[in-house]
Length: 194
Image (cartoon, rainbow, N blue to C red; front, top):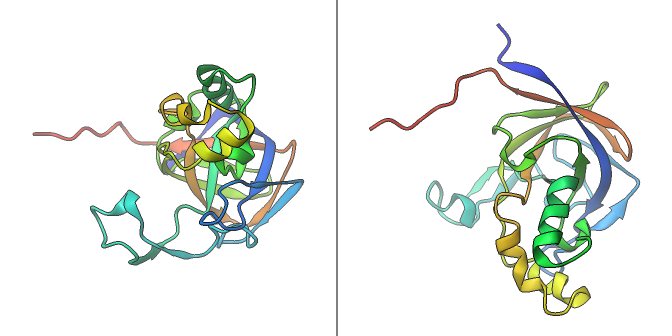
């Protein structure tokens, strides 16, 4: 029996971007297409098969431990970006200001799809969802530069809407307008007992 099942949902690629160095500048530069290897998009700061562990996994590994890179891409939802913008008092929120790699349209409640879900193109690529990408304060100064007085509202407005981190499982090229089908794990929801 297959461990993953295709859903009726497709995400349309509406924006692509690349962060050159998130230590210096979190913003991403828009792209027309994004060739993906198993290490991610090679020109992206977050590319690589491994990465040093960070605060997100501090309870599992000491900081700067070499671990598998499940954060190659930051995938956000067009619909959730609109909700964040509205809550911040903006007409729109540019995905480049929050360091997005990929913006998709058409999958409801995107930030809460199950970990291990996949976005799969007809002939590739295949992208695996690692986990929800929790909002932080880092995009605030970049949002603030273009929207004075509103940057500090990002973290609260983005709670539960910041998208997911993901990594490449099958090589291929992402292109604007392409459709990626959502596949989810075929397993019951797990609850911690006791």
